[in-house]
Image 1 (cartoon, one colour):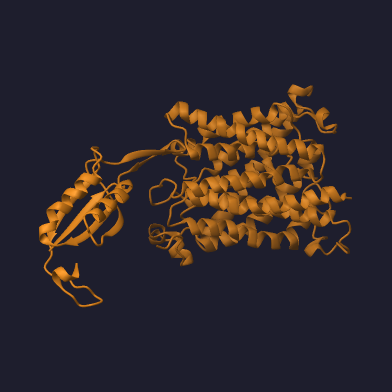
Image 2: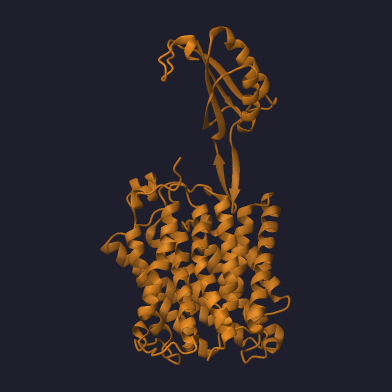
Length: 112
Length: 398
């Protein structure tokens, strides 16, 4: 099993969610996060005083999928989250050693 | 004597002015950090808890009874004890109306000391400042020696805005700079709501100060409308030219600066005057808020740049624009309406007196409080946030 984590632009969340549903992903976890990457921050001016905003709001998606599905899911995310601009985000895949569904105690593939 | 129509307007105006203090709290609170916003709201709300009680007990009496006293009233109306019947309601409405003004004046200072003042020190500061600074200056301008000399202050440009603005400067001199770097406003929508409430309430503040429902009240209403708009416009255009972008905070700040500036003039000027007063205030205040970084005083939310400077601009412009003919009234005319420089000189004198009294005594009050109880929070509280450290509350739970 693989854990797929994606950091995307917040306004892409709905598009990515719909694309993932279309390929039968049964669940994702979403968090609002802030961070910096190559996109960098920007400067805001209030009453003439400048404030550097280094951390930009992003959304983090996490989902656990069966091994054979992982590459396809990554492709779906890359395609749906992309705008071609700097700051589109990243996707990475991590090995997962054990997954349990809390309600039933099912493990592994059955728990996904 | 107060006619029923006038009484109705003064009562409504009193409620409008009360609403300004929560409006101010949002205006300031939105500009403050996320972790300090409740402390800012509490400093403002505290003023509408403590001051009405103190005003009813002794503030009104010391500030207005008897009206002819040069320097200070008396305790003849302690706890409104001289009122044997409700009468036509005029006296009661006036006391309530003036009490709302007394409440918002110290609240204005909270924007300067934001983010680092002990709430306990603020709780003691407000009553002391009310009786030692506000009450005397108010008396001198309304019925007292400055008013008798002929200076004009319709709704409290000198008594409230110049006074609180310069007091804010004295307070931050004692308090010192914030340890944590200033942050951008945590909630601009809150600032804009606060601005809207302030503007709405300001119609009571200015037009209510006619203490009657008449032509002067209607012109003051008009002036409040126009000066706020013109100053908002002027501030936004100024920053658009200087910094390349029009901002919400610029619009909000300009509106407030214009309202402050027209406050002393509201019942004395007419025609194009409110627009000119607004435009001047918008430009001058938008430049004045930059002084704090040049002169290195930490007036967190620009009380000096907006209220002191705006109030002074409006008060001095009365010397040019006062137009007694339009109001068929007895006050002195300004330079542009057939008067000589006499009124301008009186405006200058009244403001200098208020500035010196307010600055010196606010400084002394803060120094004494600092020695007795300390005015500043621990550095740890400043870093953690005053909401948790002082009030054990969180503004925005998940």
